[in-house]
Image (cartoon, rainbow, N blue to C red; front, top):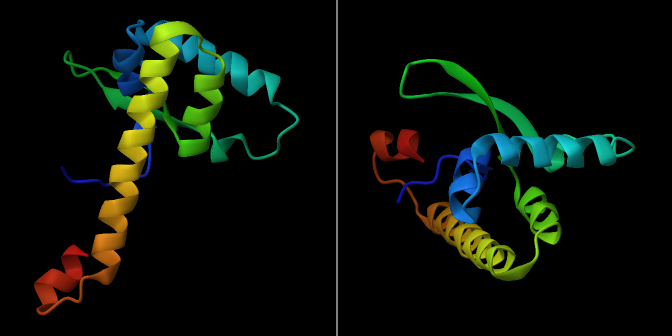
Length: 115
């Protein structure tokens, strides 16, 4: 598994919690509105876009670890627990990957560029 960003997309979150992406977007927009006093909501949710199967660009959010934690606090029951377990595992995998890459000393210019 290759980790490019330290985020989960709202599309992934929708899949993880068994909800439509539109509903997850609505949830996140409500949270962003409610934390309006927090100057840097992008430390939780980053506005973004993705290209769907019809090659159409649509809105989504990228959730940081803090954003996942905040989103998870709004969920109850089995789905909330499953989401919390999933995002915790995912971010732990990302952190492990980043640590491994930081410890890896490149031996060639190509390896240095890859890092």
